Image (cartoon, rainbow, N blue to C red):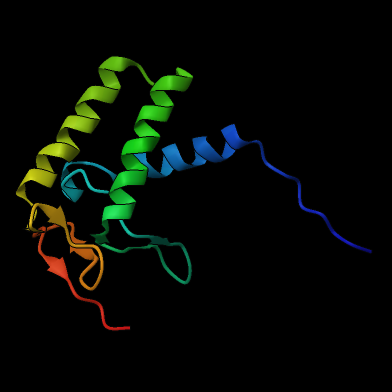
Length: 116
């Protein structure tokens, strides 16, 4: 017997993402989304982020506004706070580090070079 999981609607997936961001993107994280959240064996937030994570977060705020899930008045401060943080982050020729050093700490905003 083949088990086929229930397929979620795109809107359900988007809402799950919004809950993730609403939970973890705040003043304590410098308004940056964490790289990941581990539930087991114990809850643990990875206090680092990447340009990709930041971009997806900003797109999710805009999408939530477009779908009517949050108001314009809620969307603008979220975006402004993140953009304000981005201005403080170290860059290479005006761009966030993406290739070799593609992670930043959420606390100090310093870039991290992760050896793979």
